[in-house]
Length: 357
Image 1 (cartoon, rainbow, N blue to C red):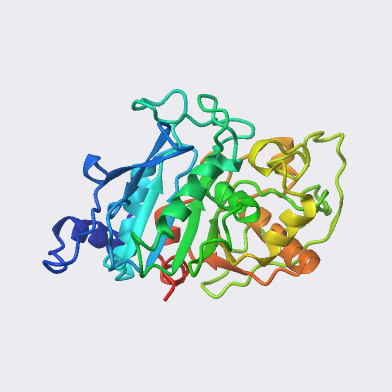
Image 2 (cartoon, rainbow, N blue to C red):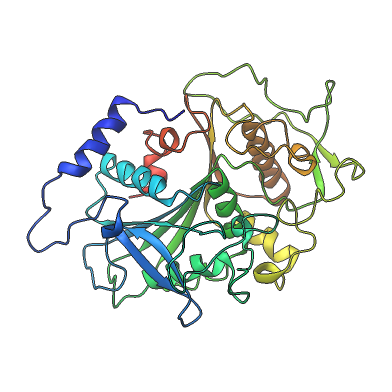
């Protein structure tokens, strides 16, 4: 069920009645309609992929100083996530200087336009850089790469200095795997990139270990009933060890681990992926009450090897990369939020993460 807080309702309503910024400043497009649809050309064309964006991608805009790319969940509902992102932008007072983009990774059962790329939705899917079945030389990560390059084009956005890539649920899986494997980070001139990984159902583990079972057979985890308060710390009560592969033979196969990678990530070594995972600026956003198997929860043996709940999986992953890889990143337990993107992205503790000063 979608939770609409009074503050969020007010933000969504304000987006439809907001006055013009100035006569000389382009107005942000904030409705998930054809008016906000843009197209990103891939592979030199004619292949293309649709995104919603608050400003044109092919027109010079000197007002833009940062960008937010927000990736949808398993339902591929880019329209919903665009509305979430623009509501968050309104609350942060960021719509005037931030270009917000919500890409759509269309699947075979979706209605698509001419030359629109279709992306895989199972296995090594769009969530993990999977190759398009209609354009087999293109990976879903190629779309993200192209968006970053277009945003870093100083002829179009001369004052843009920072890009945030984020996603929730399946989009959080995308953000986790793209953060550790993308090939454009650090190549965009003076434009920096950070990542926010929100409530994914699984992670790409950088080693073959997993959280070790405790007395009841579950991986070690925080008390699933102890929800804490708004100042709740990330649980660190985890140990790690070899996983019994007879319970899940593919537990360490990409995208759950680093084995058997193909396509976009195949040419990158395991060590390089681990290095990038640890060094790139990333914040993990975990709903305080995201402890139920809802919303496409990965209950496969490989998924359950990572922990019994999304929150536990995130806490275990964060502790491992901090302790074993020396990652200097941040994890936030988002108060009173479950598996709900609008709750996560419109809270006061998350707005500065996705709209950094």
